[in-house]
Image (cartoon, rainbow, N blue to C red; front, side):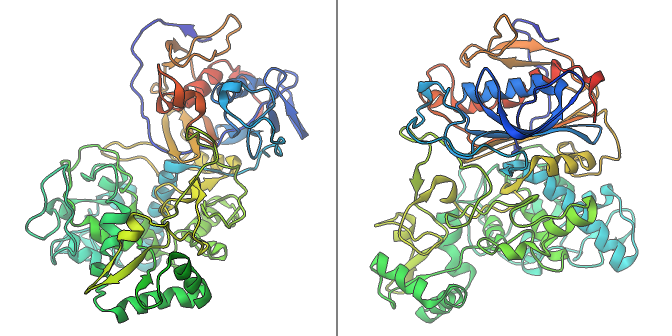
Length: 596
């Protein structure tokens, strides 16, 4: 049982940014398997629940529904397994709007709207940064498989991690311990040339965090960066990538050597070929741009983003841990170099291209799981005109959970003098054209850039991600990184990864061993052991956690009206307790009575 331990310091533990899926609750006799095709609701909260699992897991589901109730959460998914065997997968809440009519008026939900359909147990949810361990497992697999197929080499994880990606003397890189080069190029030659210091970068980036690169060449530290440094967030990269608008898109003319109106017209023709001339003409009419004075350009590619990154210094010493959302970029590029399709996942707006992607091939070949662009695990499209199996994303902006913003995926520039100016796109007047080629705002969760799937835009069903967790580590950012390595039936080691994006917050937790969390912060408990709604008054609690238990949980929001308006805590602190709610429930379970 969990005991109040006053103000004791919280034990250190691995906390990693990412996203998971949250699930539902279980009712039934002790030790019996509960399986109900019809949706049920917890008597106390009235939150609909679907799915199946061992009745002993009710404390975890109870903690999750308390979090949902306190934080006004509309939808969640939850999956639990023991030593790789699923013991419960659920969906909780509703696909849109409030989860129940029994909600706190302070949540700000529209109580006049009808209740939406309940969340099914196989409902996918965005994972955010939990996409990173998937990416790191995939790049290890692709490098090993290619070495085996091309050169009959059986490489270890240490050898893969030790390859210097931008060694100026070796392209492809040397394999540590073999004095052989990797059998094929794993970094595009143009990127290797600039990051290894052979040629100057195209665009300098003004950087307040460290010295600008006045020599015109990439930071020399890149020449010693290994794949392991990127997998462990120890390459020196800053947390965020260069700015999408000012740094990357506005410099596309430099990156693509566009100088004349004819050059820009040729770029626009690529979009005409893909989407039709009527779409582009209509978009220009809506903006008031004549055909010959303004141009639409294809969005920046990942390789172009990294070309810009070469003009930014590495802020931290090599080998020092600093989490970076840019770290998965080169592993993603390596994957795309090695798979036949050249794709990590489906292209945005092109669902059929999921087939043959690295994501589809990996899950089928390594885990025996068939996936599509909308089932299993896939890139969350984030487009307003794509049918979405995920629950509607929620985010309180002061007035509503379902606000809209300008999309940035259709950049345009206007020819002025001898330049094509991006000012009207960077500072939208009268607005920007969205992915559907219309001048209109889109749901907040669809307004941003097409986030690289390897970094954080994957979505998954809870049951599918439990299978991944049974085979691969989701955390482990040490100097010798464990993340993405095969688990090999080891159940006594603790790792975890969390993720947050617009409209989602998630956790993947692998419990086991002496590094299991032993105490954590929560709001106070009432006399029945339930967590009360007082996020401004946290207390430290302790509990015992089992070995070999994996948990995958995600909710469809990362902010609510109550935390936005709170004085004593903020939304980041409130949603950051999701894992602690789950751990409290785990500590109340009789794990010796669980039936896989």
